[in-house]
Amino acid sequence: MPAQKAHRQSVKRYARNLSVRRATRSAIGRARRAIAARTPESEDEVRRAMRQLDIAARKGVLHKNNASRRKARLAAALNRISTE
Image (cartoon, rainbow, N blue to C red; front, side, top):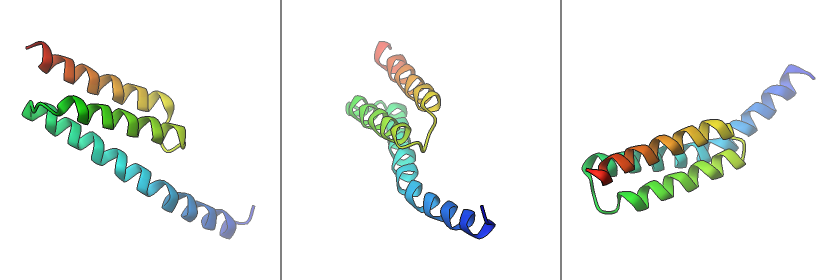
């Protein structure tokens, strides 16, 4: 494959994945801040972040094991504050 075509394809993929990656990172950040602040809506934020991670994994932006690991860590952090 010519390098120019490969570059065009990579630019397209980058642009397509960027919005999903940004939304995922934002959702994870909101969930972590909610957990750290121990807000009542932290469970909802974690649920939204998990959904966003599932979407990113389904679209191939994240590997499914990577998404699963992040979801597990969010759930563990949520459980730590809910049991205290």
